[in-house]
Length: 272
Ligand SMILES: [Zn+2]
Image (cartoon, rainbow, N blue to C red):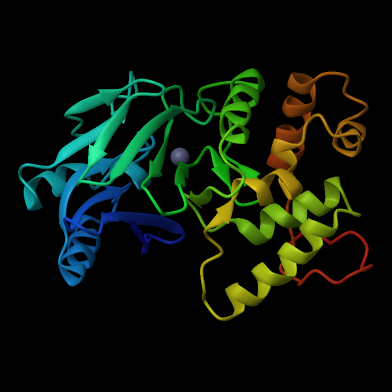
């Protein structure tokens, strides 16, 4: 199994998951259909599936064009999500096959949208990879447009249960700002400190900060850490996960971030 990272729009990621033995591919959120199809052609791969995480235009908006360019493509979306051009809706834990070797498992990951779905791709002798759209970002999560903190707690429980080494491919390049917030929540989190320095260097050379791993996210992503005492304390001594998640998301929604690089011991970053 091979994963190609493709840029779309301003800060979106699209992906191709390729079954190398058969040269068949699934396009994840191909908002720019021409770019996705050209990338597949460059690899000599045929796109058989579109995997749509959710209905927002910057993820699903290329689906009709994908059907024009690849007439027999299966367009997959979560149950009830009503994504553009869907030919198949999948429920939590439903599987589909890509080529000979790759199994795709749908994971219902609501809160950003009600039917938001992540896709776990697994193949023998490859690391598994999860495509999380706007549910889980590197160091953060998506806004709660069609769900609440209880939904995001369930989403994070499902994603936390994946193998630690599973690669995480998110829907946007929001890593630096997310980690600025993570360090406001937990200033002493050394995993977040190291990750933001790495991410700033990657961005300075226009390199993406995906993939992450489930194990790394558990170490520095505050939305996966709502049971951790420091995170609970930052959220006004929240005494349960859902309350902590609600307050954490509210604080992130009002977090301005900074255009200045993070420096060790530099104190809080001023807003933009
Ligand atoms: Zn979205």
